[in-house]
Length: 195
Image (cartoon, one colour):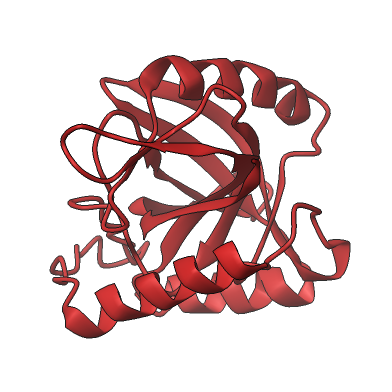
């Protein structure tokens, strides 16, 4: 049975402005083959297939994402904050270039990034999961990627966003996800499963 699958981690990248003054961030969107804090694994072959399909949305400038994670499989235009311009692979990581839009949600996102707030990036998709021998679950072949949203709580181990102030170029320290963070992820997972 397909359900809404959410994969969240701190976005690892830096903030810049392009020639037209648009705010651009680059960094890790997702990691293949590694269990997140929800003990869910996304196999590389499934993510490769979905990244290839997602590139069509990028070409059409329709690779939109929201600020905060909705419990829906539909992108809600009134909450759109960004558009993904480009994605590619580096090792097991899906790397992306993200344009922050001048929408109400995009302006909030832009100010949070400029203030050096560490934010999560979260994939949203539909699919099933199956148990793994090593523990946790693995995403099934029926997984369909919807997109990536910016959120406040991480779940992927070792992936951090390090926003860089354009004038100072100072990296922030990487935070540790404590019991509070893990319990929020667990509650979000339970709520998502209950629908």
